[in-house]
Structures are given as structure tokens and as C-alpha cells.
Length: 235
Ligand SMILES: [Fe+2]
Image (cartoon, rainbow, N blue to C red; front, side, top):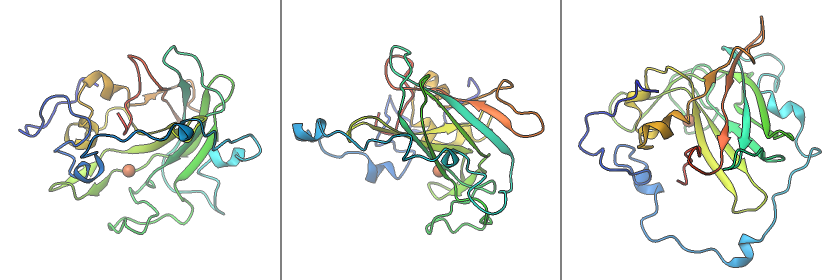
């Protein structure tokens, strides 16, 4: 992702990932005081625990949640959840949410003038398999405007959440699509200051999972720790 350059903005200071000035809402979301330590018993509280019976395989296909098919470019997004040693994390709950192909969320606060799609809700989930693998069928989300700064548009992205075995183990991040021209202008992506770390948020186009006459394939691994760790919103 060598095409990413930072905006010429004096607020882009040294390595900052939370409370990032270019991303206005971090003013309210980033901690303003030292973090509190949770009681020990919460560290040990197991759950939520999901099993194969709780998650329907259809939950991973966002194109089959309604009577008709959603409009847009059908895609398959797959990858693996790996720990810091590259070992697969099996049985992890992976959840996604996204805008439709027109860049509109089915959410009451999204009122920008792009159409809702009656055949697309924009949420899905699955459990990782023995190899740590996950796989979703969906449509490519559109770019959408937001009011962070004048003429601000988000690059196309899919929100991801990964749950572990404990209440305290949840990671939230975003996956991007390769070659998006909006990368240099997006304060959320550029809040991740290290270009190598930003590159870890961009999926790769994958001919191997592209299905003939059906869907383009994109691959994206989620690494939970170590030098190749996927940046998350808690980082
Ligand atoms: Fe979003």
C-alpha cells in the first residue's frame, strides 16, 4: 500500500492511534483518563460461548437474508484468524457489518441520499473452523460521505469483530479493498500511523477464491498479536 500518503495536516503528529486529531470523533471515543483495571473475576468470566448450533451457516451469506438478491458486486471475503505465532484460532466468532453497494447503512442515523436495498441488511457472522478460517459471501460496500471534515468520504470497508473465549476478549477493526483512491484522504485509516500496519488492513484480491460466473474473491487474515498483528480500534 505504498500509494498511501498522509494529508498535509499539522495535526498529523507522531505515532498516535487513539485521540487522533484528524478523526474528530476520537475526541469522544478515546480515553481521556488512565485506564481502569477490571475486577479479576471479570477476566475469568467465560463466555459468550458459541457453538455450531448457535450460528447458522446461512448467517455467513449476506446475499441470502431476504426474498431477493441484493444489488451490487457479489464478493467472497475469506481468511484466517491467527494468533501471534501464526497458529489458527478455531471456534472464534467473527461478525461483520457494512454499508450496501450504494454506501448506505440500514441504520437510523444514516440519512445520506443513497438508496436502501430491501434485500440487504449488512450484517453477518460465522465461527472459524479448525484451520482458523472464516468465509463470507456479500456485496462490495460503497464509499459513503461522513461529516468529519469538508467533503469527507470513507473508502469502501467492512467492519469486523472477533470474539474470543472471555468477555474481555473482543477485537474490532475494519477491512479495506485494494487500490482504493480514498486511502490518502481517510483519517480513520491514517490514524494507524505505521504504513506497514495500515497495509495489514487491506485485503488482497484472490483469484483462488474468485468463483467463475459468480463472485470476486478477497482474502484477509486477522492476526491477534505479534509484529504482524492486525491493527484494531483498541490499539
Ligand atoms: Fe463504516
